[in-house]
Image (cartoon, rainbow, N blue to C red; front, side, top):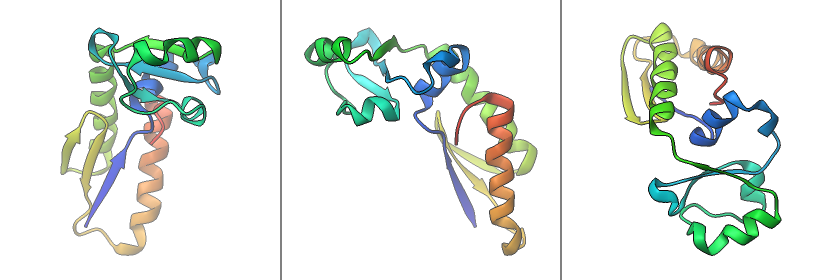
Length: 134
């Protein structure tokens, strides 16, 4: 059995670690050269910001709505991805990294009754150690 772990709005969450005042504030992260939206907070989603929206098209709307905009910082995101993966490895010896913010955790051989509590512990440990929500 496998568990899929997916970090919430990963790039936005990474930016918020160092700027906690951005919690509950609409935030988007843009692609290379600030072309398109590639990550958005729940607050930005509620304003109608879509994945892939062209920044030059929605820039005025973002400014009017007080959306905080970040250029992508892949060095930062890779660092946090490695930190999250290190937490997973504390709990499961085998995992498959699917993307920068998604992994499949191999739960083979573990008692079925223990899986939900284990996954909750892993989720909490990731939050405690990295401040990234899963």
